[in-house]
Length: 160
Image (tube, rainbow, N blue to C red; front, top):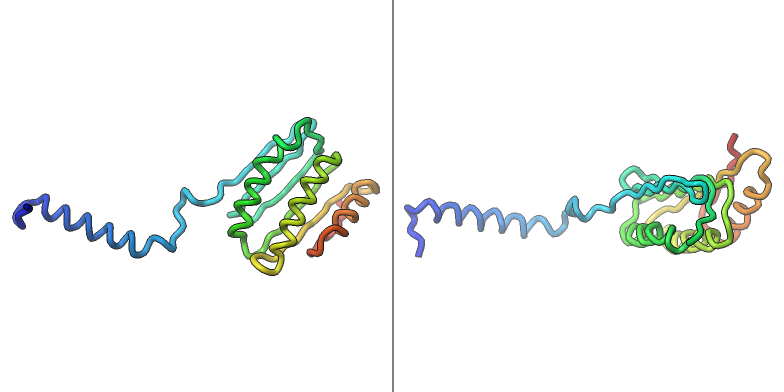
């Protein structure tokens, strides 16, 4: 059908050669489109700032957390962590620097911590840092309570 002196014939051969190389070597390579996209949710008067960035190793929650619809607010966060946990970094450090959170947020935090505990030592080395403001005994106690729920390295640090 194609003659060797036809330029289309050579383009076709090159195309199939390159395709073969891609098929042979690409399956073990993660495409850029498959990378877990970072999430940054800016704080409001009722919601915390959330920054989740696998590439930079940032997993941070800061501010007040009393969203009107906790499921709606934390749904993208839980989805992101579900995807992250399927292929986590070697080390995972989650930071909480919350001024206040309600009981609905506490349930979400516990879910994140329990999922983290299940992976600790298997796929990733988990570590949690719980920051509380100087003289804020309520947030310090909440950190202690959360620490007691999971068996992963968990530091409670006073910040100034």
